[in-house]
Every structure is written in structure tokens, then in C-alpha cells.
Image (cartoon, rainbow, N blue to C red; front, side, top):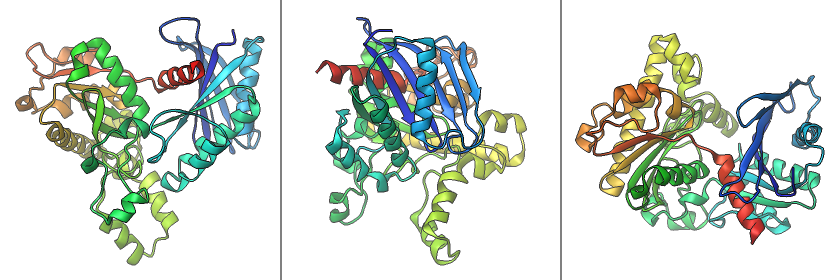
Amino acid sequence: MNSDSVLTLNAGSSSIKFSLFNDAGRADPEEVLHGQVEGIGAVPHLLAKSRTNEVLAEKQFGEGEIPDHHAALTQILSQLEARMPHLAVAAVGHRVVHGGARFTAPVVIDDETFAAMKTLSPLAPLHQPHNLAGIEAARKAFPEALQVACFDTAFHRAHPWVADTFGLPKELYDEGVRRYGFHGLSYEYVSKALVALAPEAAKRRVIVAHLGNGASMCAIENGRSVGSTMGFTALDGLPMGTRCGQLDPGVVLYLMAEKKMTPQAISDLLYKQSGLKGLSGLSQDMRELEQAGTPNALGAIEYFVSRIRRELGALTAVMNGVDFLAFSGGIGENAWRIRERVCRGFEYLGIELDHARNQAGETLVSAASSRVKVFIVRTNEELVIARHTLDLRGK
């Protein structure tokens, strides 16, 4: 492995996902392997796979053996060096959930930018501190490597003001209370991949549905985000695996005043106990819900689909029409019944599925007669991070 190796990290509360890329003069960096460490601080588990998903390493650790992100990264490096003794990581790219109003593009991380990212932690309290912990660990492990932050909010910073604000006093907007949008790294990948499949998409109206444990939708016109279902936090918009999605703020006031719930208890409810899991009382996994078929599971699926359809109509209105629809994320890419239910009845918008193609999970799933072209695009946030990291390294 040469000195053009790029490591990408996506640090969560109890996990680190990683990918290793090699840049050898190709149009795109080539993924060598990927994996994750889960259960940090509890009962950790490490898994690494090749780019063809062959298991390269798997290890179960005892409770407390990996107490923090630095220890997790040490284990990741140990596995990499065992297989690539001459590994030289030139740069590390990090997914950072929140870039606020300041960070509109990826940046090289130094003490000043790191401190600025830290001030954004109150805007994403369940994500940002863990992203920063991964950065701290990587800076210690690779003191000579270029460190780059890639922000999930950056793709949406071109929003027009009306898509960026709430109906609140302007001073709050100026303080940073605004609609940021998230999943930007995924939308960036999907929008570019879609142009490769259909070049005319670069100048047309596109809606991308990123449907997974985290779920959102984005309106993209002429390659730029003009509307997103997520807002100030990653709670807004669609119901998700364990997150509530759109919610009347009066519900929060009721929980505080009448139920005497603390902010922490409400946060736990909205982020971890709601969505598909809360509605079904069973699971946040769409596969389990479809298989279970209980009234609550079916109700959770129905609500999920209903909200996607509602947002599809809303985002169409934002752009005065739609020309392309793309499904991505774990559910969007794999759950053909969800895609079918979402698209059913939208013939008046020009959306018609080819049911055989949809069930087979082909790339193009719209019918030949469909005015709107419907695609499945398998997202790759890690590749986007690697691209940006190499671009900044080149500069």
C-alpha cells in the first residue's frame, strides 16, 4: 500500500465505521476494505471486509476492552497493519454531521476549525461529540496525516432563504436556529451518480429519497439542493428507525408541562424510542416489520409510506414538478414493496413503475411510458469523503 492511502472514518456514539482507499491515478479512489467497530464502551465487536465483502477480520472483545474511540482506532490500525505492513496513511477524511452556517464545504482540520466544530455540538448533541471524538483519536494516531472534515449539512447550504428559515424572530435565525438539512454526503453521491446514468439530470428536477434507519428526502434542481425534509436537527421530516420525524412542537410543550418530562427524557423519547420502533412496538428493522405483519407493524409501515408520499408531493411543489426520482439507503435500495407503495397513485405526476424491474431491484425501475425516470442508486458516502479528502490534499 502506497503513501496515497486515504482512511475515512464515521464515528458514532458507540461505533466507528471505516474504509481504506487507494489513490493510484484513477478517476476515483479505489476502496481496498471497509468495516466497523461496534459496542465501544460495552462489548465491542470488530469486523473488516474486502471491497467484495469477503470477511478479512472479525474479533469479539470482552466488556470494557475498548473503552473509547481512541482504543477503537488502535484496534482498527492493528488489523490494517497486520494485513498491510507497509501501510502509510496520507490523509484521514471524517464525516461530521453538523457544519452550521459557517462550513459550506469540506475543510482541513486544524486547532481553530476543530474548536469551531466543537461549538456546534449543541445543534447535534447525539452526533457531533462522537464525530469529534473520532477526529481527536485520528489526530493522535496520525499526527502527520492531513485530516479533513466533510459535513452532512454542507450540500444544503445553497438553500433559498425560505427553505432555510422558521417562522421565528429573526434574531434566532441569526444565532443559527435554521433549517440545515442532513444526509448531504449521500445526496452529493446520488446526484452525481444519477448524472452518470442520465446526463440530463444535471439540469433537471430531481427528488432523492434516502430511506434507512435515518431517513430524509431532498429536492435537487440543476444539481443544487433547494429543499430538504430535515430541519434544525436530524429529527424532522420522515419517521425513521427510532426517530419521530415531523412533530407539532406543542407535543414537546405538553410532555414538559403535563408529563413533567425532563429535556433528557424527551430527547431519549424522540431520538431513540419513536419512529418505526415506537409505532410498531417491535423493531426499527423494515425487514422484521414486513415479516411480522402484526397490526402495529403494518401501521408503522403505512405511516412511513404516507409521510414519504406527502413529502414527495411537497418537494415536487418546491420545484414546480419532478423529472427524476431516486431511492437510496438501506430501505430505499432493498425494500421493493416500499418503493411500490410510495409510487402507487402518482401517475398524475408522471411516475409509473415497471413492477418486474422494481421487484428485481434493477437500477432503472420506471416503466418505459413513465415521464419521470425512477432509479435505485446505491449510496456511497465514504467515497464522497475520500474524494474530498484527496481534493484538499492536492490543494
